[in-house]
Image (cartoon, rainbow, N blue to C red; front, side, top):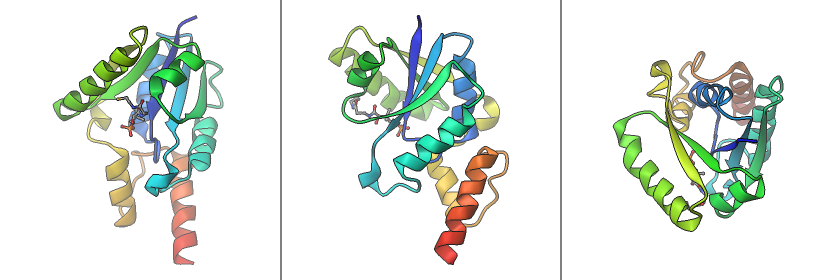
Length: 162
Ligand code: PNS
């Protein structure tokens, strides 16, 4: 059984992330989307909301599931009996940080291999940070994030503005 872990903050998940998940599905038997527990970083969405959203988005795929993790990524990878970490690469600027992480993870556990996947061109500029910037400045995110995320963003705005 080939199990891949696709880790990240996913605050929020966007169409670039979903594209990478879809690209993983024909290659691996199971894809575990792993959400870092980082609520102390004052995220837009709580880990619980992110897990709910991602579970909703993956509901039709038996080969995909979502879990939260804390501590070392390589420990989580072993826990779920995976051997591969998948990371999306958008631009050359991602490369340096990603290779540093991959090499550190290999040092921590040499059984864990990192696989990089090129993001779809149409989402190659999309990041959760930009999504948040555009959201807080009132811009339109249709086509950038999936509809359930748009709905949650609208609900967030509603709550904040009363
Ligand atoms: O989507 P992000 O925020 O770029 O994801 C970063 C993530 C979650 C993959 C990374 O921060 C991570 O793996 N954190 C877990 C802690 C860890 O294992 N650190 C050492 C590896 S370099």
